[in-house]
Length: 87
Image (cartoon, rainbow, N blue to C red; front, side, top):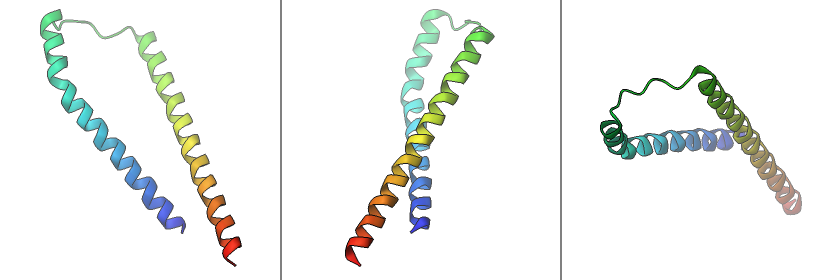
């Protein structure tokens, strides 16, 4: 059964990556229009802000991983309970 969870995790990751690519592709023309309207010569955000954003993303990633692990653990518990009832 563990292999099934690994497969599900793989496909969820792929689905997320594919969705991200789709969103980027859909928003690209809008970003181009914004760049054209604002001059597009904006400097990169200040380094401190970039570090804050990266830290926030790391925190979100950690929370998402934790929630996924909890969901998998809950599913395993439910399966175990179901198997015990069937036995």
